[in-house]
Image (cartoon, rainbow, N blue to C red; front, top):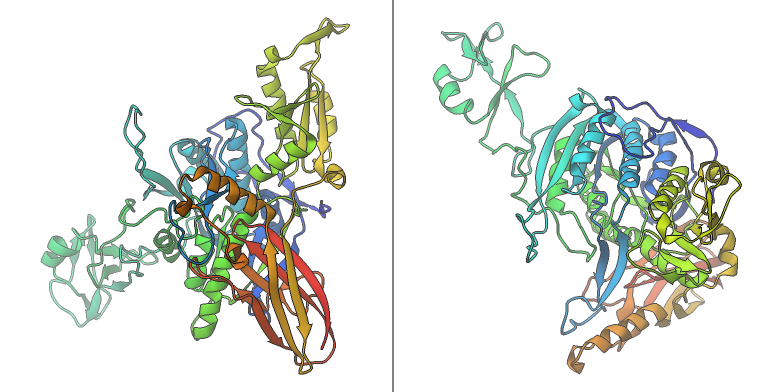
Length: 627
């Protein structure tokens, strides 16, 4: 675990508390976590880099406070909705189309199952930190559905102030009709739009997605009558000028079309829209809310993010997304010439986003537009010791298997081990006091499942069964807090996987045979001879067993079919992976497998090769060469 450096102070919420939940606690300070640079893509000589973080966004937000407090112009987030559903990324082999189902394999990405109190505190803490990061002219858009949307709206009122609520926007969702459901099919999500202050930077871009320009409604010369009456007021033009439009045209055309307003800095000056572009309202159902280009679940559409970013930022502004998923927010920000910061706790999301952004940057570098205000490079950072798991669901399965936990269903607890009920906490964040309080509350709810062993001296029951908590790192005072708070009579033990992991045997990693050599002319040659992914092949075998007809079964005829991407650092320093060579095939292509590079200087070099299969499993190897 990274060592904490300092505590960051957090400003109190602006609004009054209107919603309570068990364990509600406002943040007044938070530990600062350092981030480690891991990979760099694009222009390696760039003076500044966009940033993609792999880690718990609470820790990422704490890290960003040191450098970005009050500097981010727009935040867009689409957090988990608390639906009680697990989400999967659909993948398939590369190359030729495979008959049968579109997706032959599914890779678990994230769970959407939350205890209500935990979920509300989860959102509350992160919104408090996001507000700290916004500029005074900044804004935040939060996408939610009906499960927790009304609660989150109330929390937003508290954090940002009810007076800073701007709009609740209707956004298309994936329409699904469930047979037997008593009620109407849910067609929309809510997009809550809040400003940081009255200085908010916002423009109505219209439904065409272009910026609408308002022009002053006065022209040279004097005409009579000079005054115009609208908005319950008489307006007189500046000296030596006249109002451009007659009273009749104002009344019959401009006012009904919402094409006239007063200037924001001088309320005595009238402005008008030159064209009849249809203004945006809060109904955005004219564009898709989700798309599925990458195969990642709940992928927000590019038209949606284009509308948000164009309306709330200028060229070169900073856009952030702390639940980045498939990377739509940074992808659109990159295309529009905005700088960006993105984060996700799932490695699959980081891999999908990195590949997507790398492809965009490669195309942009070929064009090199002179007026581009964005950056042609980004770095990937870690803020925790994430070297074992890709995501929470995979982590829970592996941990339970390695500890020998027997799974149980329809219970708050995940399984049983010896004489203990077991709760496996999310592996990509540390165990905190709110977690402990939630577990103790669940023990009290489930107390009838425990067997009374004896009575204490005070007459309180002591139970035979205990509870084992398995976590990845702990807050410093968690053990002491547990000792003081546990009044249940049930023995509760905590196991830290960061301490235990050296003694655990985890899943098999991919295997590869790579030939790396340097010819006499200082030309580097890298060739992938073989690649094998045990997990992917086993999943493929299981899927093929389900398919009744042989013609629908998928076969790996070329190992390159199971590789999603290749990146090579030709001079690896052992710390920051510099992706000098990248191979990013589209869905119907396969990797090249052979790569060349010309060294300009003689010397010894370390070549690092990173291979990612279609399930997101990574292979990494280094080679020493002399040129």
